[in-house]
Length: 397
Ligand code: SAH
Image (cartoon, rainbow, N blue to C red; front, side, top):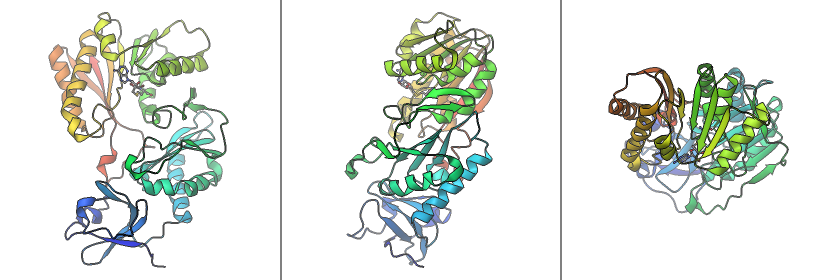
């Protein structure tokens, strides 16, 4: 059956990247937009000679169409159900659904061929986040399809898109359950328990993307004095404690984050954990005031310093300053985990900022690991923009 969607025609020559399966049509590539096309509509995209390119969700903005499929495909309930099945099949292949692990990303936008959609699973609750009007309109279909994947075990679907949808689209999304209701917010990652605050927390409530890096940190923790800077929910702190750290200090400027961290330490290790302390303080201030050599395992996982391309220069200066401060006071033999989650900052740029920090301090620094996002945040090879998390593990003498 041929689709009856409205058709958007590309300017001449603008089909090249789409023919290489890049999933975005920029507004400048369109010859025009018919008056009856509305934001969130599914549209057909054709080349200037009328050749069909595929179908996608239209929106107003610099990315005008997010491609859902490169064919004359009907975007209906069965389409979403099938894409979700495929996403879950990958997570099962990755071994992420186990008795000791029920926390994982089920859908990572373009990386799962569902641009504009993010779904994180926390036990029997899924948190669904739309980044495009098209996915906003499809939210109920997607939620129902989620609960129908048998072995996934999702019973509650919380929709959390108040801050992720284009403000101008005037969609007035409400963060709330669209299926089920609050049941429990404790989920398990590699045998550790976490309170997930999907109501008020950042992203979907948890930084699922640091799971593998937290595990790696655990291996270095034995006998070390740990500083977890920008701790948020205390993920790295809890892994460090399990790994046998001598002591762990968690720092975040948000008092809310500190109380989440304290709650997660308590959830795993009980009431009085003598070797954990937490500080609601600014990172730069804390680093300025800390003693030389106080720590020999340090995590720096700041928020995205560059949210847009225009902010890259300042972001790089920020990464350099932050890393230089930590390196200058690191004890000899320190292992430093340093990250950037700014999509606009490239792996090379980040490494150069960290290099500049090292050079500034004059310490002997070696790279032990080069880290990235885990496999449940896959990167569509035709959409390199999907790679955003960058990390270096350094050995500082
Ligand atoms: N490492 C965390 C995620 C960090 S998110 C994890 O694994 O889950 C970034 C955190 O940095 C947020 O919790 C935010 O409150 C905190 N933050 C932002 N600016 C800060 C600053 N100047 N000093 C300290 N913390 C800051």
